[in-house]
Image (tube, rainbow, N blue to C red; front, side, top):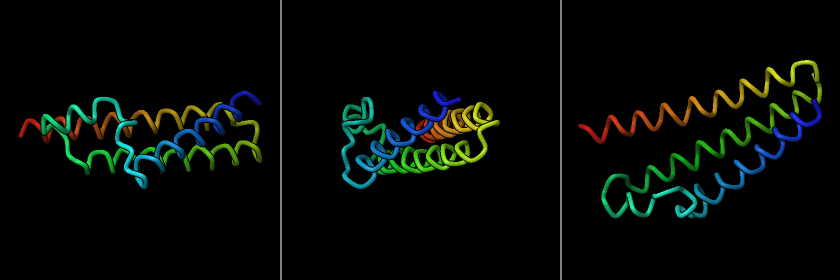
Length: 104
């Protein structure tokens, strides 16, 4: 369980770091193929802002889950899986929404 808590903490800090750099510092080069897609007019700057915000929010959520698992260690695996699945679902839904808008 200690390793799961450590993974939650590290993942939360990494996502907060990337989210901060993308959302506040506008370092869009941290997003794969963003510059190329921007040149091809597939995405605009709001795409980068939203991705940065998603990462920042999920980083905060992972830190909160880490703190909860420190208080309630019996459910560490469940909280970890909920957090990871939530992050994956959020990013997939956002990508599908973006792809649908490109088709229109």
